[in-house]
Length: 440
Image 1 (cartoon, rainbow, N blue to C red):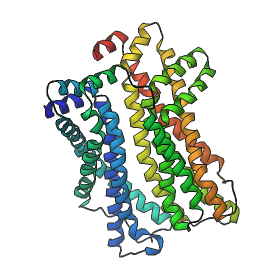
Image 2: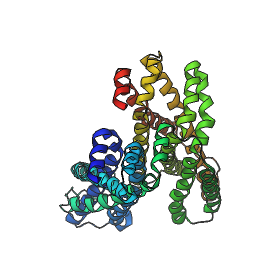
Image 3: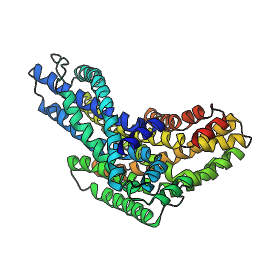
Image 4: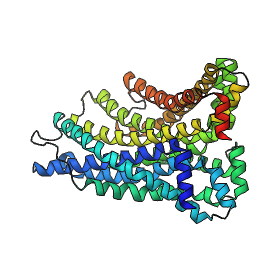
């Protein structure tokens, strides 16, 4: 039965595993590149504790473990949500919660093996480019050249496989325990409300983030930097928990686009809960990058002294890692939600809507998600930046270059567009009757 559930999931819903696969490949890429950097430094007999290169490899491996566990859980949660009906049927004929969890864990393992191998190959290229960048920017001496680490593949597997299994098991808890009848009803009619417990938890996370941010000004620079990510994670977790409320509050924005926008505003009431899963990674990536960039640019603006290139390179490298993981999670969630709407799109087409009209509805929904994500990210970043800048520089407003703002907005637009409009356009190419028969 376990093998049957795995085969059914991989054959019927292959696109839902793109998120876990990309997460595992990204983790393997970072591990391989980090170990390659360490091997390159050792081969050149270079030790640079003053620049932090001695701790970069283990630090990035730890980041990969931490983020893989979280993001695989998020992306596998999106993947298994599409299997609710299949799992409910399996439960009806006698499958226990343990068998369901093992089947989902096996799905993650099956995806992890080829994904890790692909990440290992890509990690060699990324590592070479990384070392070249470190040398070019003066972080590492010119004597350093890239050397691959032969043990990187088994080490990458030691990272991706356990984190994938654990993340999948966590994601499977709710669906494996739910009664078959409840799972079937959830599939037929998605829950619309945020729930009292979820709302209270979101408010507590938001209050905790604000309180922690108000106290961060009393910490020294190193402690404040360590606390920054945790504070933004709390704020973005609050946004995820309150996501259905926030998206429904932003839904009227779509009405400015006329009748098409009005339809989109109505559909957001149904899709707000599932789309809220993308708010956390979107807001986290945008707010974290904004804080990192704003801290450096504001210091340079106030003091008139540019920071050293090696410091910026290392700091922005870590920011890129966080952002990449978050982007994968957001994109996977959006693609999964959009691909699950095949039957809905077919029904709209059968009711007389053209392909272009259906796409305009999806675009209006995407605008709501984009605006909501940017507002949440700006609020989370400001909550942390204002006390930090006031304590360290005596200014309340960050100096963020227009180019950085435009890049951030464009990044969110690109992720949401690729996760919603593009897969919707693909689905709408299929004749509506064919799409309905496939889902039947």
